[in-house]
Every structure is written in structure tokens, then in C-alpha cells.
Length: 505
Image 1 (cartoon, rainbow, N blue to C red):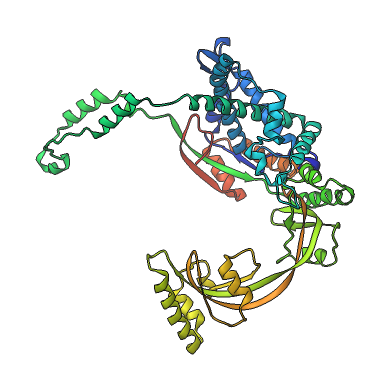
Image 2 (image 1 turned 180 degrees about the vertical axis):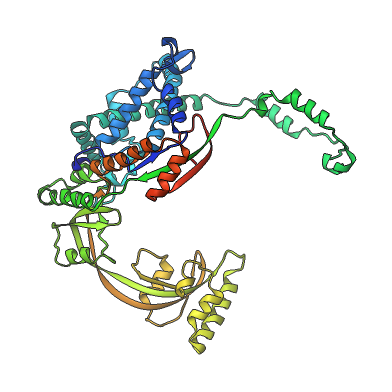
């Protein structure tokens, strides 16, 4: 989170005790200067033009800094994704810019603005929830302008990264459209393809499968086997990549109670500023980990602490911090109201089996009459319902609003008397629906600033020190196993890890 003040470290530390040195050596040589002559300081070439290793590493670092500058910690898995993405981007640029320069194709400021907030706005912005007017739900170009202005002022590294990405995407799109527009098939080519597809031949053939010959009828001597082996052993198809089997110990880095308390305290310090700001969406974009500057339902189900905060809240109030899953959050209340809620149970006769709706309705009517006579709804659910999601709960769906279900089901659950049995058709088939409860519930909506509960640098360093001390003490495999058993660490195994593997299976 940008406001929490630092680029958090990765949340899990993986220490490979046995065999790790080999992998580190290979990767270290790949991405350092050791063992390379100046002529070999590149990672590839396109059209004879070298891709410089230093430039590649600088762009990887710039991308990582770009993410970190907006409060997005880079995990090891994300770091590998960044490396792959930068590599692909550089290849694409080498290929595409060669052709773009031949055409003299460029993007001017007017065209760049047009794809962000003009008449030909990119789908990325047109459909983005953060760029829609909260009242109308329609795209608001002013929100895009505000967003880029905010990035340029607060996060210039990320702003530059986004600008380069958008410009390249637009250039590639224009070039591809030109190529696509120039592709056509003339009459001769069409006729040739037609006749080629129409041509066919008929022939007879005889085949004898190897498997039709019993093994007992063929004798292969050891000398023949050895001769075959010697003849083919050096063939490329039999080559195997060098690999190693590892035993290792994992040290998980989990946030401590003090880490949670610090994150909660940090969020609490934002409450006054959040109350006083007039630019709520920008505030959320700046300080929230999830960066969702749209209204959310503040659901206090199962959270007594949050329910108590909501009870006396008014529009414009900022509530929290409160805990939700692996995050803490504060929320600015934008709307308080009431909504209809209902609970119902049902039996679904699915239309996936090829039966007509008339057949399903007849069957539903028969089941309904049995339920009316014997009052055995749950038994009939178990025997006949084809909705696996509700069968374990006796066919029940509880405490839902009018938006959750399909319209026909909603009408039966909300607008029919409690206890009545109603047969309705939906796209899923035919339902027998019994409303169980119809109530009203308080609905609170707001803009949320959240922070992921993550380990602090201090916690990370403590675990790192523990892992480092263990690695020093474990001089060999037997010592490692003894020490791990003594300290209660779990020893894991990974087999056939390749020299250039970046992940342990």
C-alpha cells in the first residue's frame, strides 16, 4: 500500500539447502558478468541486432520499480512474470519498430489523448469500473484525465510505464490493421483452393500391426540389444537435461500480531483525511491496496465489530478500521438504505437432459402434489433435485436480495406467500419454489481503503536470520536432516530439478 510507506518484501522465503548452490551458480552466471566476454553481454538477437543484457536488466528493474511505486509488492512469481514480459516486449519492439520505421508511423499527442478520453477511447478505459460515473454508470472521460494527472504527479515511474505501453499497443494495432486490410484472395487463388479441396482418390492398402506379432515369436539377443544401444545412444532424441534431486526446508513468513496492529494503526491515521477529502475516488486510488474506486456493499454478516460500526453510521462518515479476511479496511459511507431479502428452498428439474418443458412441468406438478400431501419437501429435494449446490442444504438459499437470482425465481421467492409452492420456468429448467422468509435488511454502501495484512520488514528479517542460521549449521545432508528433525522443521523433496529451473515442483 503506497501510504503504508514502504515496498513490502516477499511474503514467503524459500531456502534450498541441498542442491541450491548449483542452481544459484547457473542463474548467477546467466545474469552477472562472470564467465562472459564483452562480446557475449547480450541475451539474444533479432534481425542480427543484439538485445543487450544491461538494457534488459534495466527494463526489468524499471518495471519492478513501477509496480512498487504504486504500492504493489513484487513477489518471486511476479518477478519471473515481469522478466518474461520484458523479454517478449523487447522482441516485439525489435520486430515491429523495424516495420513501423519503414512506414514512418508515429503517434501524436492528439491521437494519444483520443484513445484515452476522446471519441475513440480504448476499451480498457471505456469498460473500466473506475472510469464510470457513479450516478449514471456511463463512461466519464474526465475520470481518465484525473487518473493520468494523478499518476503523473504522484507516481511518475508508473506513469511513464503506462504511457509506453499504450503508445506501443496503439502503434501495433494500426500496423496490424494495415496488414489485415491488404490481405485478399483473388479469383485464381479461390478456384485453386476449391479444386484442391474437391480432389480425392480411392485406394486399397494392407497393414500389419507390430502388436499382432507375439513377443514369444521374436528372439533378441543381448548382443543385438547392445549393438542397437551403441548405434543410437548419441542421438539427440535420447538426450536428457541435467538435473538434480533436492531436499529442502521452507521458512514461511507470516505477519505477527504486532504487524497487524501496525497496519490497523496506519489505516486509523487516514480516517480524518478520508472524512475531509472531496476527491474520494482519488483518495482510494492513492491509498488502497485493491485500488477499487467504486462503491461496494459493506457487508457485516458474521462480523460483529463491523456491524456495531455500521449501526450508528451516517452518510459521509468514515468507519473502521475493521478486519475482513486477510485485510484491514476503512470505509466512507456513501449510501444507507433498506432492501428486500428472502430465503427460499427449491427443487430443480434440469432441462439439460433433453426433456421438453412440458414434460418437466408435468413432473413438477406431480412432485408438488406429493409434497402437499406428505409435507416432505426435503426428502423430495434429495430424490429429485438436480441443483447440486443446494441439495446438501435441503434445497435452501438463504438471505439473498432481488439481484442475486434469475427473475422468475426472484418473483416466486419475494412476491408469493411464505409457505406456498410455486412452479416456475427458468433457463435452468423447472423449479418448485417455496418462500421461507421475506424481510428487509439495512444496506450500506461505501468507498473502501484497504490494506493487505502482510509481514513487516522486521518480521521478514527475523525469519531470514532463522533460515540463514539453519543453512550455516546444516553443513551436509545428514546434518541438515538431523537439525531439521531436532527443530521440528519439515523436510521436503523435489526430484529432477533442471539446471535452469526457476521453480521447485
